[in-house]
Length: 379
Ligand code: UD1
Ligand code: UDP
Image 1: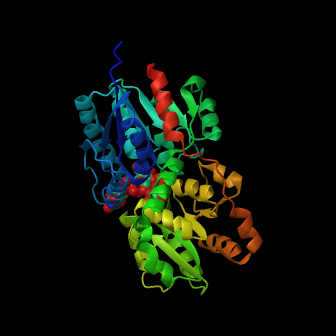
Image 2 (image 1 turned 90 degrees about the vertical axis):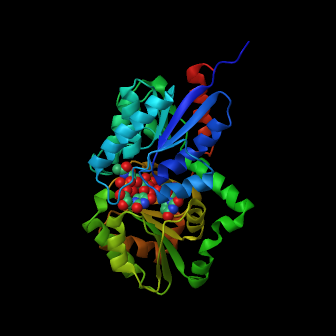
């Protein structure tokens, strides 16, 4: 008996976090003869996407190169929709995989839906319950959820959110979050080749003996006043002689202009370019505390037992907060300084948060997703 033709799966992604969370799925699909895996990057991000592609050894089959400086959501979305539609007409995939909640994921799902191609959603069911936080991601996820065929929910919390929205329970699978697969993969890669993550050595020497706070910030809803407050808080805490801040600054100009103006030239603050994934994993390892508004960092820090203060009013990732490793602190400068000071000065408060938890998965999510796809097509 001849084996059935491989299923043609098109993966669509465009930003750093999507690339990090989908490279384990790309690796698993490429290693599996039941699938023909085609990768299309929108390049909604350029340099920050390319950093991940290089580390993960992925050469895209299609690259739309859409990124424009300080791009608007409407121009970006329009370009994505037409560009991704063209690729789908050429590739004619059996299924399309998107991840998370970016403009690329939303437009990729919509272009597939317009062609009646089944959509599989990785990291499905995250909900903050507030359409303005995170913005526009909360609505992007809901749009994708309305069109998806299979929903790969990272946790039972995200599964429950989908069931509350009356998604067919048979279409929702709890897989864990592929970010943990990515973190395990990069940790193993660094163990084999320490040079992959050795680029922070000078900073590590300069800041030896100080408590290190790792910072990332990029959320659109925090632009303007939120970013100013975050910068003010960092400036104040970094004035302590026992503290150092390492802050890889996102390439979004709305982040850079505020952070460069407020924090350049301070002794205890290192503003650095976006780190590639091995170096960011190193930062997570050496940091005493993470201060972030990122989605992915809220997942990685609890897995590593790093206390993480989340500069948001609400989160679609309550698991880290429930586990005790993450705390929502908003973007008010006073509140951020108070929360950081508590962790720096109160050993008990620190130890209570600094415990590794595994709410987001066991590192085998990509394998589960591939098996679920194979079951779906009867291979
Ligand atoms: C996007 C996603 C957000 C995700 C974030 C991860 C949307 C609407 N937003 O936000 O969900 O959390 O990525 O980082 O999909 N830039 C560069 N080089 C890069 C990347 C960005 O120069 O490699 C600059 C460009 O000026 C670009 C701007 O950043 O126009 C904004 O990029 P964009 O993808 O629109 O928004 P992000 O804020 O990065
Ligand atoms: N990250 C990275 N280099 C950096 C900052 C973050 O590799 O300088 C990784 C981080 O480990 C996480 C992901 O990027 O996996 C998070 O991306 P980002 O914060 O841009 O987006 P979000 O997760 O908020 O959508």
